[in-house]
Every structure is written in C-alpha cells, then in structure tokens.
Length: 412
Image 1 (cartoon, helix red, strand yellow):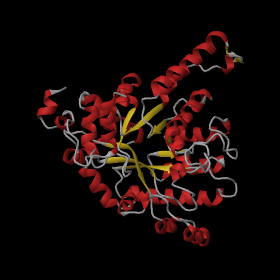
Image 2 (cartoon, one colour):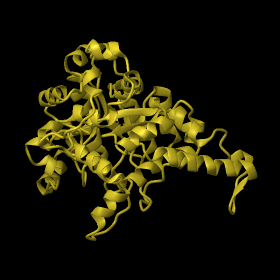
Image 3 (cartoon, one colour):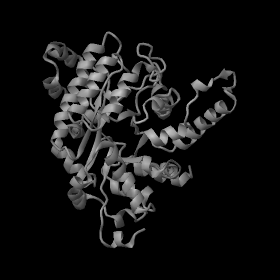
Image 4 (spheres, one colour):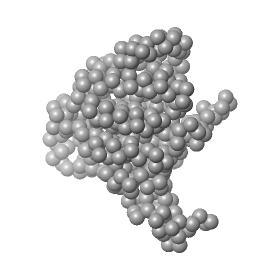
C-alpha cells in the first residue's frame, strides 16, 4: 500500500454500478402518451402497492433528487448507474422483477417503459455528471426495440439498456439465444450502448405455494446467470465482438466456476467434435473459449461484495469488477458504505481498489472522473480510512455487515 496515499489523505471516488430509481405514478402520468391517460387512471385506481420500501418515507429516495444526492454524498458515493425500481404504468410488479408482457399487455406496457425512459432522461439531466440511467426495452417487437435503443442513446441514457431475462416457462417471447434479436445487439454494438441484465427476473412461476418465495430467493442467482451462458454459447459475442454486456446485483463468486465449466465443455467439443451424444461440426464450434468471450465482452456489477466475491476477482481480474451499493434498497450498503468497504476491502491495494470502485464503471458507462473529482475530494472515503479493518459493528448494522459477520463466524 502506498504510504503517500495514506499520509496525504487521498480519497476514493465511489461510483455505484447498481442503484435504483423511478417516479411515482402521478409523475409517470405526465410522461405517458396522452392516449393512455384514461386507461392509466383506471389501472392506477385498481393498483395496490405490495412493496414496503415504496410505502414508507423511504420511497421518496427513488425520485427526490436532492435527498438522494445528499444521502449518497454523506455515505461517500458521488455517482451511480441507475436501474429501475418503482412500478411503471401498467406493470404487474416492480420493473426489474416483471416477466415480459404477453401480446395482450404489450402495447400498454411498452407505453409504460417509454414513460419511465422519458422521466429517467429528464431526472438524470438534473445531475448529468453523477447519473448514468439504464433505459428499458422489450424483446417482443425487435424493430421497436431497436427504435428504443436509438432513443436511449440519443437522449443521453449512458447506462445503456436493460434486457428482460426470459424465463423457461415464458413461451410468448423467444429466448435470448435466438438470433432473431441480432438487430438489437447490432444496434447496441454500433452505437456503443451497453447491454445490461439484472438479477430478479427470468425466474419461472413457482405458483401459490408457501415455499414459492423461498424458492425465488434461493434460485434468483442461478437464473440471473443464464443470460451470460446463453450469450456466450449462442455466439452473440462472436457475431458482435464489440458488444458490451454487464450483469448486476448477483455477486461474482459464482463466475470462476461457471467459466471453468463452460471452458471444459468447449474443450471436449473441440477435441472430439462431440460431448456425450451431441455432435458439433467445425462450423458450430466457437473460435474462442467461453472465458475469453467473458474477458473481452463482459463486466459484473458486484453489489454489496462479499469476501467470496473479493477472492473471485483475483481469478476474474479486477478490470471486470464494478462495485455497487444497491441504493436505496434496504439490503444495500447505505448508510454504512464506508464500514462495508472496510469489512471486505481493507487489504486491497489502492490502485486496484480505485479500478473496482470507479474506473471500470467510468470506462463502461462514460463517467468523467475529472468532473467527479471535486465531489470525491469532499465526500469520498480516504485511503487510510478504508485500509482500517472493521473490528466492531455499528450499533444498528445493516444486512450487508451482518452477512459478512455471520459468514466469518461460521466459516462459510
């Protein structure tokens, strides 16, 4: 560790690669195509909010720009990549958890995400140096999805697009590995628009069972990894070598093992032309190893990183690791971001840590680090502060701090 960095009081720039925001319903109405207003009013009157974090005073963190900037600055965070969080018009649930619309709901829900995208563009413009908004698209209509990619680019949403993860029991939308979506990936590649997937959707319908929620929680990580596997094995990254793909809020501890498994499958196919009873000709084999596509095309937004995630980055490479706070979710690092960093990152070299805390996200999402420097100089945690191991928890620790303390206590 650089003694100069510690002694001089140098500070880190914190860019969270995973935050969430959205408007309330009254505001969304202002951004909705007027032809949908009457139907929206009827839907809004029927809608009942089941989400606790959208009911109490904390809900305003999703759209109150001043509150959000002040709270995050106090916590050391000066910039953010913004995924959706609230319920857009005509959605059955929060945006990151909703399944793709069927043909009956497609038009109204498309109007809903376009209202969100318009709101997000205006909201990010309030603090353009600090916000990279992620726009939403649907896969149901490829031509209109391409139109939305162009709109997102033209309106300054530097976070790129959020793709819906297609669950195995969704039959009305083609799976992500279908080449029908190539025009979308081509547009993103040509425009330099990052493609993002986020944990929370793409899971099957577990039905109305008491264990359904527990199954969702325990399997959400597995289904969040499926887009990566599908993009690699279907040749998306081979056809579009400059496509940028980021996965968020799913950690990264799983990635080394998965990439080893994919590389082994690839090796067996290339060695013999088959794996088990499945036969693959030369024209069906990928020129690169799966891990090579990952290193060329992919990044991981590691929200609330664990000790296992930090160990995995030594295999994956620090250049693929983007730290995230998950603000304003209760399971995120706020308001103890500094303590969370000290808990799992105190022994990381400052140069490597700067890469994970800011530089990787800045490169992918086009943040201007020079523009953020004054804010980081005022609010960012110091190198010396983060280098101090956390030996005592705050009086009311959050879930992230408790998780790591539990893991250390039981050695898991």
